Each structure stands twice: as C-alpha cells, then as structure tokens.
Length: 285
Image 1: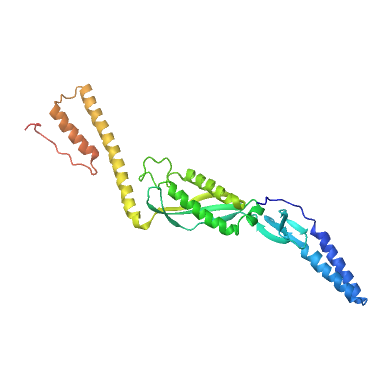
Image 2: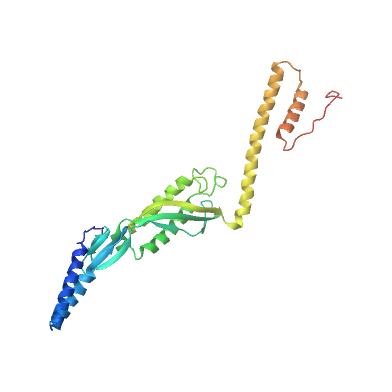
C-alpha cells in the first residue's frame, strides 16, 4: 500500500512568466515568416508550460501520478507548476459531515429499533484514500452504516430489557459515541480517513413495538414510585408508633396497633385525599 509522500512543487508564477515569453516569441516568428518555428514554440508553450500549472486551494490537495507511479501529494495551498504528464487527482482535506439515514435493526436483546448517527470525518492520508479503495466517499457511507448496525446489535436499548447491562444505547450516550468513533476509525483507517466525531442522532423503538414499550416503561416507573412511597410510609408509621410509645401518649394493644398501622398506610399510600371519619365510641363497640 502506498504511503503518503508530501512534496513541494515549484512556483507557478515563473512558469506563467515563461508562458508569456514563449507566446511572444511564437508571435515574433510567425510575424517574421517562420510559421514552423512559431508553431513548435506554441505547442511547447501549451503542452509543457501551460498544462503543468495547477492551483491548490486551502484545505485541498493534489495527488500526482506519473504513468502509474505515485509521485507525491501537494498539500500546501498556492499556485504551482508540476510535470504536465502527471495525473492530478484533487482530494479535499475539509471536514465532511455525514448525516446517516435511519436504520431499522435489532438491539442486543432482539428488540427492533431505529437508529441513525452523525459522523464528522476528513481525509488524512491522501495516498490511501486514492489507491486503497475504489471510491473513498462511497466507502465511508457503507462502512459507517455497517458500524452503526454493529453498535446497535452490541447493546440493549435500555435497562428495562437488560438490567445487568453496564452500557445501554439510551443511557450511555458518551460511552456509545466513544465506541462508535473507535470502531469507525478502525474501519476507515484503511482508506486514510480520520473520524473527528461520531454521535447518535436518532434513537427510538420501531413503530410496531413503540406503544408496547412505552406502556412497559410507564408501568416500571409506576412500580418504582409505589415502592418508594411504601418504603416511606412504613418508615413514617414506625416513627409514629415509636414516638407514641416513647412519650407514653397512649397504650396500644396489638389489635389497636394493627388498626392504626392499617389506617396510616391507607392515608399515606392512597392516590387521593382521604375523608377522615371521627369514631366517638371505642374500637370494640
């Protein structure tokens, strides 16, 4: 595989000056009645001098190939003259933004999800980008899609599906982005591509299971809230009984304690405000 070789080409301004000088000389010979000499100078001026002039814009490069051999890459912006018989392939060094399409894949536990990623990349090794792959733009698109699919297959969507998972697509955004960026650099390194940033831009359950999963999430949230309410209510009841016993407010037998605990739990755990009922008798009448 060819490795990148950066070269410095001669300035094109001297060649441009030579072009005008030879053009004037050709005109002189035509005027003096020597058309053959004038034509020869004109052909040399166009084929050798003019066709060797190139302009390299900022954040662009030119890969030079002479008769199948890689000569080097001009990366510095400017006006240059190079061998006119070389093939001059333009390769952009600017950062590209790939907004991947939404893919429908299965996560690690088999749930169908929709996922898409935004990838920022640029060419670092021009020789590999030109010679290692057929079309590096198409190569980036295909390998990026494959990396996103592999990422989705490696982790569950959420902890609801796999409570033992340390990383999920939904909860581990930073870790998932880091893993995606690492895999993309491994895949695209062959083409001389460096991934600057990669992040998940879209993540959702597939439409056919989205409603069911939403209900499941809501049920899990309700259960968690109820568990917290019950734990708090039990603590408050325990504290109330302890305070009443400590300050000798009232002596309660086991049956009265059970009734009090029942009433307090109903009040503390109920979803709606309770309506108190004043008992003017005793617990036994």
